[in-house]
Structure formats: structure tokens, C-alpha cells
Image (tube, rainbow over all chains, first blue to last red):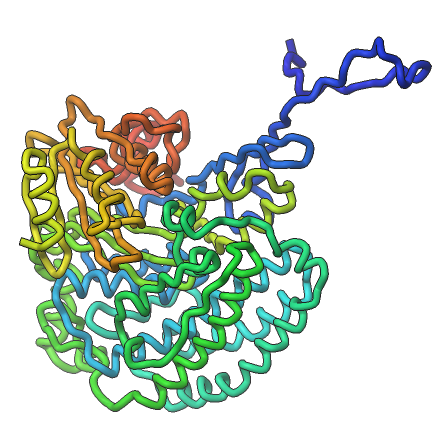
Length: 414
Length: 165
């Protein structure tokens, strides 16, 4: 039987007796709707099976794994240095922060202290990446909800920073600029000048983004009171980053477990009240101002110095020495072909990426390769709360919810 | 021994197996039967208050008698401390208590461990594969005996020594 499924039944009312009592009561049942994997607002390839009652969501089941590439398995087959380019492909919108989180984890494993200037450079670039991430988020979230103009304004400013990355490391998205023990190269005077220019240019632009949205009735109607989650539930679900802070929990690893140059900078962590999509939007926009503040302070405080820790058994030699000095070339060759000898042990190191807590759990049994590397991806864990947060809202609010987590499927599926 | 580990040992002396502290990370290994009980204690006890589950992971040690190791990482937002809880699971009876009733977020994390390593979780509400396809029958990819190049239909491909002309 081809049409055994009763979900396609069409109800007809007898035209002669529209109010007749003899008509059978209208049968209601839940409708099953597949959203994705080709839906543009799923930010990649995510499928969600929605169970609907009318237009209300009763249950939603995320189906993930379309972008699963086995990154954790690949990590077990390569050396620690070789895994850095793989981290770019996790959250491909914000590669720098993935590099940062991974390098910090390996440094914790190897017990390496990073030179001070490198710490400042790392903080600056990480905050630039946070700005890019939030711009990307704001643009696409507004686009999904229907405000197209914001998208163009955000991407216009994002382009400046991507070009800055291009000049910094030769790539706009897959950067691989961080190295275990430091960073690949110092900022040139041209890059410094461009960054300072951007810092003066940018804050008025954030005001512009806000002007577009703060009195936009559609934006307010579609974000206020949508996707509400209480602080207790948000913590229980393991949410992190702006998604958690929107519910009023000030959990931010930059403050809770300070790293890099964050303890030397003064900045505040914006916290929401209602735990709805609007609060999470507001936090991200406020974080743009904070990022500008942090970069300014870092540029003021930064002193001259080396940008790479000098631990020859682990860290890479400077590039100019590799091409002129035989020992440095041998060192580079050995580090890339055999890797360094990590001590046996187990560490977890979490970093506050712009989406949330990005952590690496590394188990080492000695030797040049990690025995097991587990990535704690915020996008994946946020999707765990999707069903709970979407219940009772409309189909259109599911789109708002994808956006408010700031999911990127590369990181979610790994 | 670290203060937190000491308290676990005092409260559950029979279940406590070992404690390691390395690079500032505290890890406590307990018996498999006591995992749920200890986790409940970690969540509720006023001195512990581990309200935040960071991640659930698993490690495969093929040469050991109890082959798999399940790792939970907890954080306390109110107390600001961190703890790693570990337990060993044998391959013949590959099951451990689910913690979904204590931390809601454990749901997806445990499903991932099941998908990647084949460790089942007792009382889990919806234990299905999450990253691999539902009908994937070729094993558990993160086990050490699973080859990097994959299993199944890919293995049937012929390797060509040179490009055919």
C-alpha cells in the first residue's frame, strides 16, 4: 500500500451541513517535519526532526554527523604539531581560537611557559577573532530572522579583519597562526597601524548595528521571550559562553581561570537577566565593545620580546634560522617527522572561545602522538539543549534557536 | 592527597580506587558500580557542588583486563573547582550507569561515547548513535582496533598502482 501513512489525510467538511453534529470530530495528530539538512539557516548540514502540533513544536530531535570527519581519530595518528591545521577545520569561522585552545592544552601537557609578548599577541589576535565571530553571528542571525541590512554592515567590517588576518598569516579563515609555545610570527608595523586604525573605526560601527536592531519591532518580537532557559537548567545542560551568560550566570573562563594576558586587562563580562534570545544577542554586542577595550590595553602594555618559548625539544625554531642554520633545520625536521616526547599523563584544558568553552582532553602515554584526544565542542553540547529549549515555540523560532547557539557544524560534528 | 579526593575517599572508602594529581588536574578513579552514587554526592554535597558537567570522554586500553575507561569532567561554578571522575569498564560487560538524571547535559555526551567507543549507559533515555549514521554496523570508530582508513565498503576498493590509461 502506497498511502498507508495516515498523516496525509485531508479533512473535508460536508458543504451542505457545515455545523452538523453528525460529522465526525476532526481528527488531530502530530505532524512530523524534517528541517534540513539543506536548510540555509542550519548553518551547515544539520537536520532536525520536528514533531508539530499545529505550528507549535512538541519535540525536536537533532540529527547530526553529516560533517563528521573523525578529527579525534586523525589526532591519534599524527604528531602534536601536525594537529594544529586540523583544529582550523573545527570551527571554520573562528580558526584562531581553536588553534589557541589546542596550543594551550598541549602547553599544559608539556608544562611550557609562553613568553610575555607572545601572550599579549595571542590575546590580541584571539579578541580580533572574537570580534569576527560575533560579527558573523550577528549578521547571519539577523539574516535568518529577516533583517538583511545588518548582514551587509557586519560583513563589510568583518572583511577588514579577514584581510588583516591575510596579511598576518597568509590565510583568511584557516589560519594556523598559533604554535605550541608561542606564535608563528610577530606583528609587523603595518599590521599594528592597521589594527589601531580599526580600533578607532569600529566602535561607532557597533552603535550602527545596534541602531538597526534596538527599535526594530520584528527583531524584538522574534527574539524577546524566545528560547528562554533558566540559569539552573542552562548550567545543568552544560551550556557555556554567551548562551549561558544570557541566563545570568557569569561563567567566563577568562575571569574564572585567567589565562594569556586577560588577568592584566580590565574588562567586564556582560550578563543577561531573562535568558532569552534577546539577552544573548545583547551580550554578544556588548562583548564587541569589551574586545575593543582588551585589544587597546594589550597594545598599550605590550613590550618587546621573543614570541616563541625557547624549549628546543618541543618548540619550533624561528623560520629564518631554519633556512640558514643546520641545527635549526634538523630540529625542525625532527619535530615534524617524529614529534616531541610528551610525558605520560592526562590533562584537560578549557578556553573561552566566542561560542563557549572549547576544551581539549589529552591522554598521553609518552611518545610523539596523543593516545587519545577528545574535543569538548560548545556547539555540540548546546545542541543537546535544543529539544528542551524549543518546546512550545513556533517553527519559525527553531531558526532563531539555531542562531542563538551560534552553532557551526564543523565543530559540532568534528 | 587533594582535599576533594580525600573527601570522596572518606565518604566512599569501598568504592574509591585511586587518585592522581598532575599539572593541577585532580582525577579520582572509583568502582564502576558506585559511579552514580558518587556522582550524586558530587552534585549535591555542599562542599562539592559540582553543578556543571564539562564533558564525558572515554579511553580505550586494549591490553588491559578492564579495557575501557570512562572519564567525566566536572566543574563547580559556585565553588570554582574542577574534578575528573574515572572508572574502568570491561569489554565483556560494557555498561555503566548514566548520569542523565543528575546533569541534563550528559544526554548527548553519553550518546557520543556510545557512538564512538561502544560503551552503553544504563537508564539513558535515548541511547542511539549520534555522529555516525543510525544504520552503521561496522563497529565503533574510536576503538584502537578500528583502522584509520575505515572499515566496510571502503575496504573492498582495489588499490591501483598507477592511473589506468
